[in-house]
Length: 524
Image 1 (cartoon, rainbow, N blue to C red):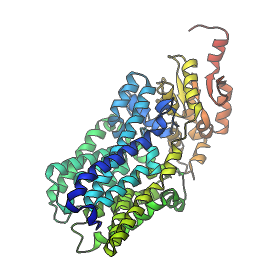
Image 2: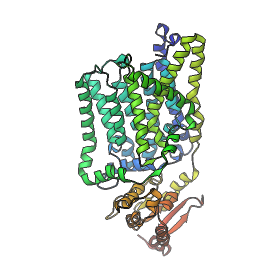
Image 3: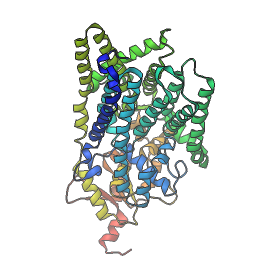
Image 4: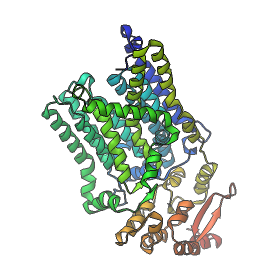
């Protein structure tokens, strides 16, 4: 506990802390949804490549197209199944509306996760820990960004924090059998969304109290295993070879991308934009490790073992991974916020043990620490490129409903109300980045990074075959990067560039045969 008896005397903390956590959760939702309060709505905020892939893939599944069999998907299919409400709207209505709904749902997940972080920290280490942990999560710049769209991270964090709240009980008490089963289900959901999601399940077993019956651990593992089989098994069995190739082999063989230097990755994970919250987390990690190994506190240190294991294993996984970008830190946000709460409780407890006024001052300082990240989180909410909305309007005006539209940014097609098309004899062009990298790696050549892989001829063959069947193409900077010099020459020889009258930055490429037919007045 944090030692602040003046916060808990007479049970007053029990009365006011739930309301305070809810208030922080509401603030977290406002921070995430802030860029959506704009005349363009949720669709005006900048679109990330990954969220376009996940949203489009989930809608394609509702259309009867299966991952691994009909289109390449490099993660387990859990997120596609669990994103059903928004995906159904996108599949049977306007994909743009479904995409907007998915973004709003992500902000709600972020708000709930904020409350769960605070609840767990407060139950384990006292009110100071709970409030600071909730604030640290609410203001975490990377998780704020990721919880504005249908990424994997909002779902992973929500399930992971739910798992921790169910599995870890106060004073080292063992969970009831039904709670162990529910925790196992949540661990299974995480592993069915992303392979790295299994880290939280491992952390839960490491955190197991010494007196916990093995029957409860067995129930946890069985529930997790059955959940993975239920969510992953049916779709994996539809194309087992492709599942192993896309989800397991590709992730282990892909060339390096993003931040490739391991030292630079560590710097990104401990970036100064979160410096004060990270200082608290560093203190919390030291406290957690000390309590986890000290004989006198080992039995009651299940929360400390859990959060330290989840944090350290995730850091190790990112250092070993073939790709890393700073937004990956969103999966670290939960353990990092919990450690910050523990560190804050320890510092305030130490100060209040010396003098009550010192404890009050320390409490105010640790509350301010997470707020330092607010400016960075707010800066991200200002990214609303007007060309994005203009492009969606231009595509709706220029592309007939029965024409095929392919894009190197799947989110751009969603904004225009278009899903990736079905092309005769070809896979659905959804994740062109992974498709081209997979073709390059399948050649047997080892590449130092993704750029070198895209420069190889093997990465271009299947992509050019897909483009040859597309009526319209959204190229963008990503397409310019992924296509080699020779492929760009082929593309420009077979497609004509159209520019919106509203902005020269808005472009749409039309296949020459369609341009000639339009010029001669040919009718369909």
